[in-house]
Image (cartoon, rainbow, N blue to C red):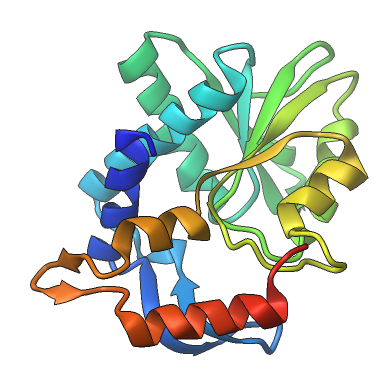
Length: 224
């Protein structure tokens, strides 16, 4: 596993973004782990987060795109932080764009904020995590309405590796439905490999009990 992926896993735990225990998800599933990207709240955290995203996007999509699109609301700071990281790490100016939940009818009008999207633009979508693909259902038609653009792919921070609407993972379903690559900085398999029986901050984050709960969860909800 690449060094930046190992560092990103530790970063999620240290920032209290990735937690282990007993959680009820929006879907109603009982999960032994929970990720909340809203817990990234400081400037230094967002700077680091942007760097991890930029490295992962660079690994999967290179520099062959023009605009980083972050769906409202959590995607807005993600897109801003990551475009800044692209400038620092790779010396390229990637534009950011996000959507509004409500169309603005005065001043800077329209549904988009940040850079306009026009014919010929190549776009990468950035999100925190996806479990059902609902955000892409809303995002895809907004992007396609902007003209003849190419969507290079989607990048999220964590692949939960559980079933979406069918038997496949939400990321695999997005690829099948929209014909775009969907990738994550790390997967839960990476997380378990890196943290199982390893001490972080004076305690073992994934001990035998939590590992058994994770294994049981994937027996029930794991993607095929």
